Structure formats: C-alpha cells, structure tokens
Figure 1: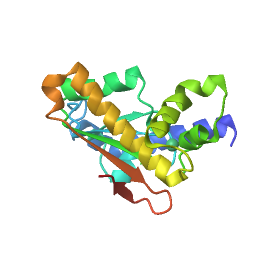
Figure 2 (figure 1 turned 135 degrees about the vertical axis):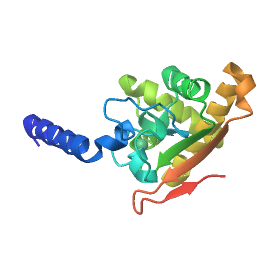
Figure 3 (figure 1 turned 90 degrees about the vertical axis):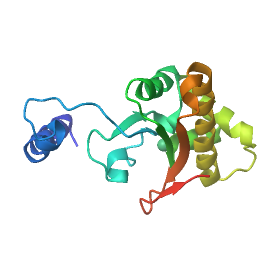
Figure 4 (figure 1 turned 180 degrees about the vertical axis):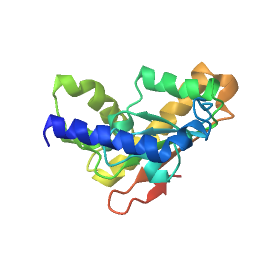
Length: 185
Ligand SMILES: [Zn+2]
C-alpha cells in the first residue's frame, strides 16, 4: 500500500473507533478522562501479529503494555513496568513471547549487524544461559520468555524489594497458528 492509502485507512479506522467505541474509552461519560487502572502488565514483542488486547479479548484500559521486539527489557521498559506496579498498583506481570519471533530467529542466526546488537545481544545472552546449542526455534522462544520473567523478578527485587514479593510474574507464548496462549510453568 502507498503511504496515502495507509494513512487514509488509519484515519478512517480512527473515525470508526471513536464513533463505535468512544463510550468504552470514557466510561460512558463524554469529556471525562477515565482513570488509568490496568489489571496487568503485559510485556510483549513488537510483532504486528501479537496485538495484546485482542489476543486476550480485553477492553482498552485494562492492560498496561510494554512492547519491544523480542520483549528485550532495556532500562525504559523495566522502568515502565515499575511505574505500573508502583503508581498504578498492578500486581500481575505477564511476559508473552510468540511463535516464529523474528528477534529470536535473528539471535539464533548469529547476525553480527552492529545496529541490531542492542536487540539481539540480550536474546543471545538469554539463550546462552539455557544452552543454545541445537535448540529449536520453539524452545528458544520459550527460553526467551522464561529468561525475561527471571529478569523482571530480579529487577523488582533490586529496585523495589518491598513490592517484589507482592508481584506475580509469569511467562506465556502465543501460537500464531491458532491464537492460543500457552502459559509457562
Ligand atoms: Zn517477536
């Protein structure tokens, strides 16, 4: 699609969104900005095939979402999680990887593009911790999600030890084939 077509589709889509779902956004009271009270943080991949609210069939306002390719937890991503826990009183954090993750595949391919290093190196490190020799793609996706769970827990214990024990952090992987989310132990 050309740029103008894309922008027109987005403008039209926003018009429909406001017309059809505007009340959902403002809690039915026009002009009143709803309180920000998400029930969970979801740390997901930027992959366009993993739209978090749709995957869990949740309305706007319910999920605090941090999306970075390969759900790499750079400092601002971690601080965003902390914000939701401290300021919004969220107590559930979900790391959601997905089938056929391009970031995981890039890490497995051994790419040495320096521009991609901030994205790929953390995933390479995560996979190395579980032993990445001969690991298949699905197992690598799971390992990447599990490693991110460990990173979030360690981060919270370090920066907010008084809150860390109150926060449940769990991992999940979304299938692109079926849409189903598998919850990791
Ligand atoms: Zn991905």
